Length: 185
Image (cartoon, rainbow, N blue to C red; front, side, top):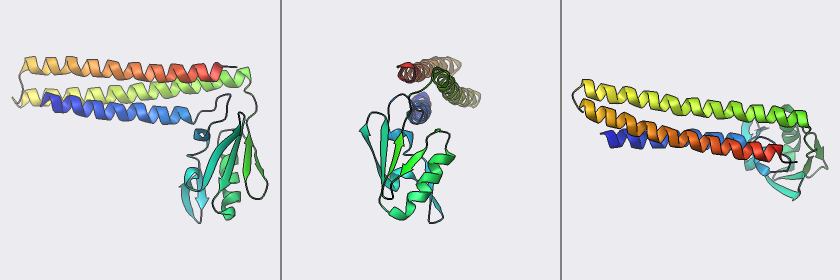
């Protein structure tokens, strides 16, 4: 019973870490990365579609992204999605492809991005703590229904705290890596 609760904790907390990792990949650093734009939502024949399903995204140069749509009719939609995003990039459309030139980050913009990273890290930590809270509540319900003893509940809560600490540490490491990437000149 307690093993099931711990397994559920692992799964749900891993989901929070994966969501954070995906969000951090979309935050701009000094170098070009397809992850920057691949999840942008583009209006494609009335259906919101992720950019990665509509085009190939490559990095021909360290500060340039090249977007080659499979269907040339979607060029304008891709351009609109990039302009509407909070990336602060201007697309260059040559009729077949879109080039995104990433200007070097200013010191002020770097600090702002670090604040965004810290905010996202805190959201992930809160998500992990919420999972812990929910599962502690479950353990207490098991105890109240005489399915487990008080000692088992306490042991379960201790194990749950260890799992929580491990995932909080993973979140901190992921945020630290991204922060170093952003501050790298």
